Length: 195
Image 1 (cartoon, one colour):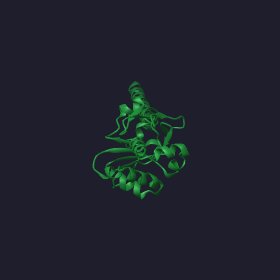
Image 2 (cartoon, rainbow, N blue to C red):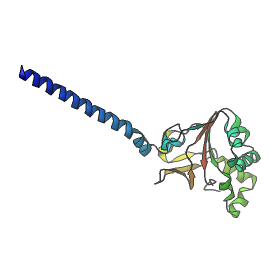
Image 3 (cartoon, one colour):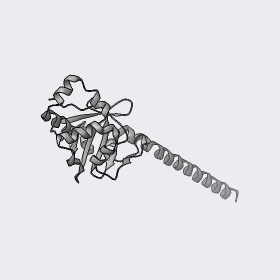
Image 4 (cartoon, helix red, strand yellow):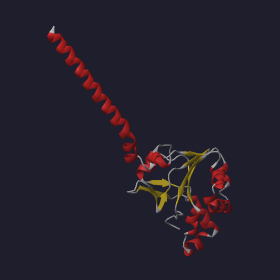
């Protein structure tokens, strides 16, 4: 009788230990998943909804063109897109990603670069370098380059502080989804290598 009680107690203790161990494994997995996702997939978080850095993914019920127009920090970009004849394309259905320089990014262009940029053919070339048609794939992000509408590629890399760099520009989290694509705010105007 006494042996049966000991075996029953030992069985219960083992079950309790096993349940505690499984609980610890479950909690550890739950806690580490976002950390591992951030470690191995930080760049792709810019282009897809995610919980990267605990930011919500901003959404807009408008097109890219309308969303940019509503945000005053993109006033120069909106004017430049209109002047280049690209603005109306961002109102149409489809899927686009735009690397959107802020007004301060345009203001920080050197006089020499701005003078060359002001020529109509160069303006179109530079602005198309900020546009990607279709959805950006994990493979493109993993390869470290993204082909733009202009025809050349933007380099994408991780920085030690957890942010993402597009050529020399820093991408700001979170991105904004719209009805026809994604807006990624950047702090510099991207200049193609052959500009």
